[in-house]
Image 1 (cartoon, rainbow, N blue to C red):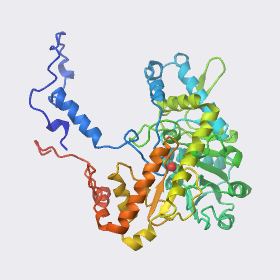
Image 2 (image 1 turned 180 degrees about the horizontal axis):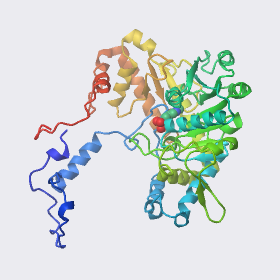
Image 3 (image 1 turned 60 degrees about the vertical axis):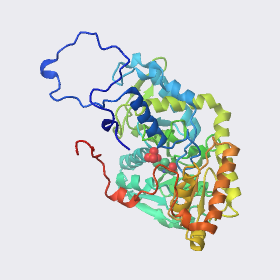
Image 4 (image 1 turned 45 degrees about the horizontal axis):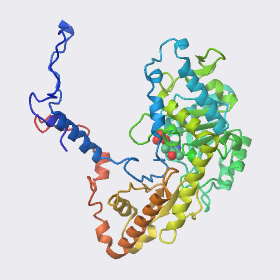
Length: 479
Ligand SMILES: *Cc1c(COP(=O)(O)O)cnc(C)c1O
């Protein structure tokens, strides 16, 4: 597809408006030295260009998007409306605090609500993403041990069913990673955990539900073992839509948790941001939080905690995402928050149950908000891989699930229907999965060439990652 700069012609522009009759001012030495190169297109060309671009992308507004672990759900538009109010958008982080009391109140109310939901005592909104929250949470754990003068604690235990970002964040925060395996039931292997903990344990990071969509049944035992060894417990709460309003990390022995507002709390996810990965902690860690915390009674102010780890982002993080989260929580209320989680779990179990007669579910069909299928057997029998089925879905207007993750399942497809899909949508998706399974048995060759109806077929993914072409070459100038 051509860029907008390659369309149109010299001198073409929006012609229906009268020309500018305001006085022209010369800026002298401050004016630009070279001509500003702008697209020269008619309104019609402009409109078609962006419509074509929109048609080439696929989002939750187009259809079903069961991308496991990513929670691609529908976000009520009213929350966008709330975030667009002038009072929230026409502000500056450096203006005097007494002129931004409403915004500080948003932080305070959001902190209160999310602490209530997670069972934590304080929260920072600085981190801009889930992984950024993990890094921040680990800095709190590090600061805690350092302040106590316990310099031996350099290891973070990460089960193999953790989200991929967990070990990466721990390494970035300067920890050594101790990987422990899952037991055959998909939960943390307690014996390995017992062996792994010791005087060098800084903490454990648990993704719960884990990446195979299971709530670890030994969770209380796990946090107890780590605490007894002197470590702290970190809860990866990016997928809180499986449990919110039902159980709280703070009640299960966790000291730190991060949330993904851009998954669970009504900010669209996947468009490249902005996101928000707030970190909640128990009161003994509050002194280490980054940035400033809102406090005060009648007049709200924000203050840097005593032993703050510093700043992990400018000012208060992505404020408008917090506004959307607060609007979402207030409109749903106590019951609605609970119901959202119950529906997320119900929808995943409904689909898993309907598909288990043809697709292998290595950990059974009883899951939380997502489930993982293994297409290993199908591939052995028909040569049709998880990749082929994922590509096949595109021809039916369905976005593929997460593929080849988690790594502990071969030929994995990880399906997260989310709470906002109707039964009709789920039934339709099940039919498509069934059709693809039949197609694999009858004419597998065809599926190797799918998709045939999508704008882009099968790009060379390895080359795209290893030799990315990050600059577009203009067809006119060759630059
Ligand atoms: C998405 C996700 C993350 C990472 O969040 P980002 O905002 O993409 O950095 C971490 N953990 C889990 C379980 C997730 O699903």
